[in-house]
Image 1 (cartoon, helix red, strand yellow):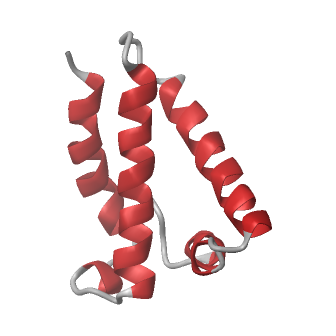
Image 2: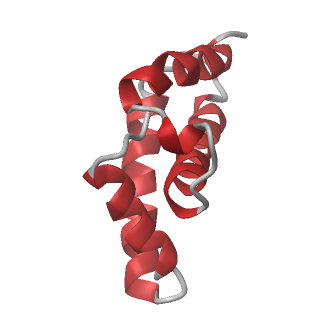
Length: 95
């Protein structure tokens, strides 16, 4: 799960500049890399779709935490957020 470290900042920079094609391409590459890692952990035929859902949630968490600064996400450390995030995404690993 994203944390309050450099990873959030890198995604935010790319998100804010996403109307600029080189930044959009860089963001797509990062999301593609995340999606591939997640897809490799899923054994179901629709694993790419499930991986895209996880990537979408990660981006949503980054936006909520860092861009919108929504509580309680903003004030939670990554190690506190990870178990909740994993519980939600675990559903994607089931049939």
